[in-house]
Image (tube, rainbow, N blue to C red; front, side, top):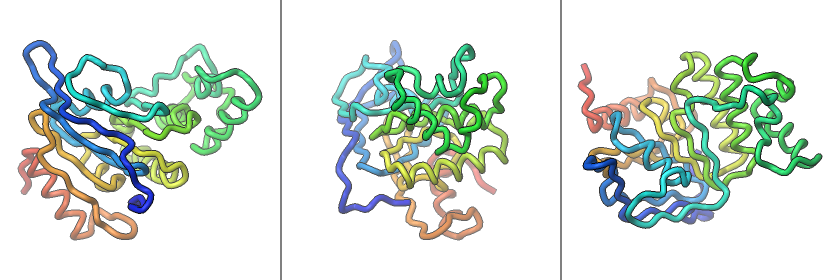
Amino acid sequence: MAADPAFMSPVVVSRGVTKAFGERVVLKDFSLDIQDGEFVALLGRSGSGKSTFLRVLGALDADIQGHVRVPQRRSIVFQDPRLFPWLRVLRNVIIGLPRNSVTHERGLAALEDVGRANHANAWPRTLSGGEAQRAALARALVREPQLLLLDEPFGALDALTKIRMHSLLQDLYKRHRPAVLLVTHDVDEAILLADRVLVLTDGRISLSETVDISGPRRRTEAQFSALRSRLLNELGVEQN
C-alpha cells in the first residue's frame, strides 16, 4: 500500500505545534510531515492528543502555537457518522456542494464507490452502523480530498463489520490516493492499513515505525507480531 516515493511531497507540514487546555498541555512542540499519498496511523493512550492534532489539521481547532500547513481540500470522518436524520442518504453525501446534476452524479458515484448506491434515497435511521459509516466515507470522498482525516471511524462497529470496513478503506485508498491520517486505539488496525505508524506520548511522537510488510498483511506473520509488540510496549501495554 505504500505510495511511490518518486511522486511524494509533503501535503501536511506541522512545526512546533503546542496546544493546551487550561494548564494541561496535550501537544508539545509537535512536528510531523505527511507525504502525498501516504497513509499514516497515529496511536496513543486516551488523552494523549491524537484527536486534538487531527482537529487542528481539520481546521476545527485553531487555538494553537506553531505552524501548520494543510491542503485546502480535506475531509474528516468521525466515529459517529454524523448524518443528518432529516436528509436522505444522497443529500447527506452531497451536502454543502452545489445542487446540480453534476453534483448529483458525483454523489451517486461516491455511494457506488462504497457499495451503497442502492441506499441513495434511504433515511439514515434505516441504516446499520456499517452502512452509515459507508455513507460518511462517501461524503468525505465526494469532495476529492487531498487529505483524508479519520478519527477512529470504525471504533463503534462490531468485529465482523470492522473487517469489512478495513477492506473497503484499503480499496478506496488505492483508487483515490489521498494522504490519510488515521487516529486509532487499535494497534492491529494501524498495522493492517498504514504505511507508517506513530505513537504519541506526552504530546510528542515517541516512536515512528514504517510498516514494511510485503503482500497481504496477516496477524499470524512474524513481522506483524514483532511490530505489534514494539508498538504495544511503547504504549505501555504488558504482554504475556
